[in-house]
Image (tube, rainbow, N blue to C red):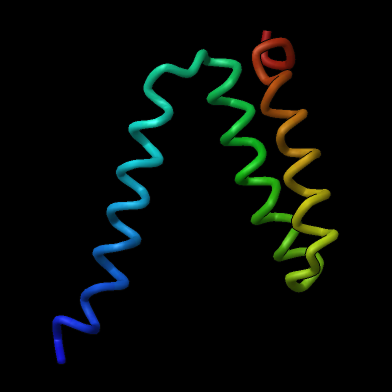
Length: 74
């Protein structure tokens, strides 16, 4: 029974590791864009109660802010 319960945790851990490995060749701007899109998607989902439109809109706005982050912080 414990094997079945541990499978989802292992699958998520594997997905995270593979996802992080895929970011190794990204430029700083690409990495900031991805981080901004992820944070924006979470923020949009929270603010709109899980609405798909809010999640996509938040990801778009966060991606733009992440892309421009170096220019903003100079």
